[in-house]
Image 1 (cartoon, rainbow, N blue to C red):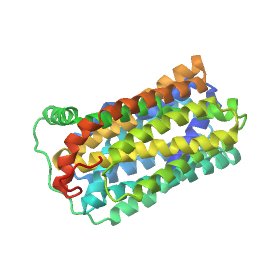
Image 2: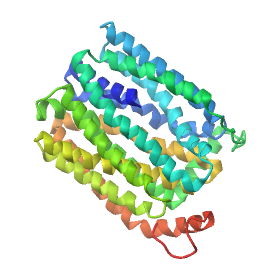
Image 3: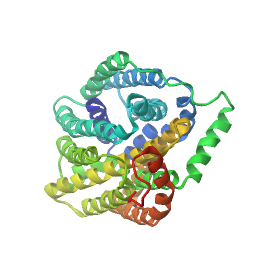
Image 4: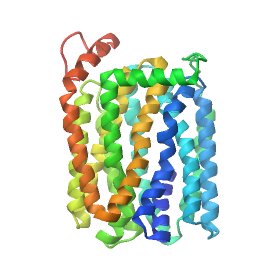
Length: 397
């Protein structure tokens, strides 16, 4: 994950160095992630049918190849923005399959469902510890040696991932869905998520936050250079501060015993994320913005990880892959549309106004989600009682 974050920051800086275009920054982000929006929900059908362990081995190997190709092109000095776009789309297709498989694989690794919140929080804390370290290292490496070394380190880091996967001893779960028509199985998962109020509401809020809020990341090179008059080190510090806030958020979630109360946390954290974005868009002082990045990182990861935990807890096992593919589409798949939208808006309105507009939308979404909490409680409470998480008494969700 350190390598992955290094590559993400290096790509942003490489594209901005080659083009100095906010629009192309958004376009590259769009191409990297849009395949997840198109394909993730269909990938969930196969995640429910195939061996998730083998799927992840294949996707991680292909991700390594993508990073090494990008490293070779950059270190040879022949890379162009079109190389970045094509390889980004290739990686996006890989991620469309990898993301729902990895999310569903968590349940295969965790024996007791009551430990799921801690497993998800641990996973998120590792990701965000890397998010703290990776951008900072990327900024230093790009400034000293160039972007190619970040891509090379990321490619080599997959060796450890692949070895770890081979060392795992996983009892493969039985096939959860039949060999029925793919379209009918896919439709079943969509209707299940749409009709079950808690899943639908969580996915809608997550989609909104991803669309209008997460795109602030692709605009970071503009803030680093035009607003704070810095370079790749400044970019690394900004994203690293967001990562530190996110790591703090995962430690908070890891301290919780179960999923009870997380729906309210989802609403609060989404609103906090929106407030952070508005203040960040108003600030032109670096140290103030670094502090605000802590808030945005905290709000973002708590909203995402809490949504993940509630979904993983309440979803039927035979539909887990399909629901988690919708989660991947909501969180990762909406982001490319947000990146493209942010690039267009930043070109016309400027990066600060674009970020503040996104933050305002997040706050509105949090308020609307809060109004649905009573209906969500009515659906979730019987599930928690059946699982033994709650007694059969009214309780916070």
